[in-house]
Length: 117
Image (tube, rainbow, N blue to C red; front, side):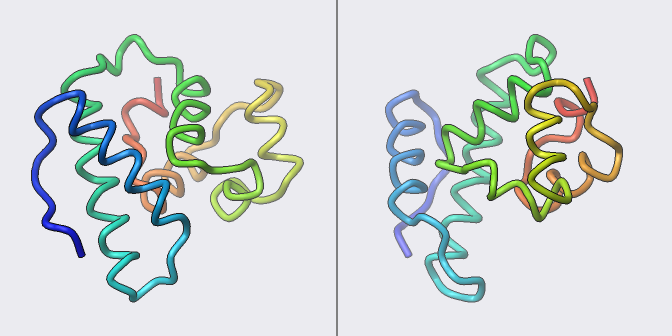
């Protein structure tokens, strides 16, 4: 595992994003999984401090995080239920439920306060 540290600059932020993409979707319990999880926490902290969350729409935030983390709609199925629900949520024809928000927060570290907005 790389030597991780708190992200203080946009350059460090971009480097951390790049590394998360490189790690892809590692198996749970591996050093790569732990590194990806820690990097995600550091990225969320940096984003919370540098990108005002009150200005973010929950669905836009979700789409941005998907892009940043290289996630597809299929990757959200475990958190939202099924492909149809994922599609409806992303197309704004179905709101995020409290269970969806809890699942996204617990599973992907997305800030609940942004998803509740």
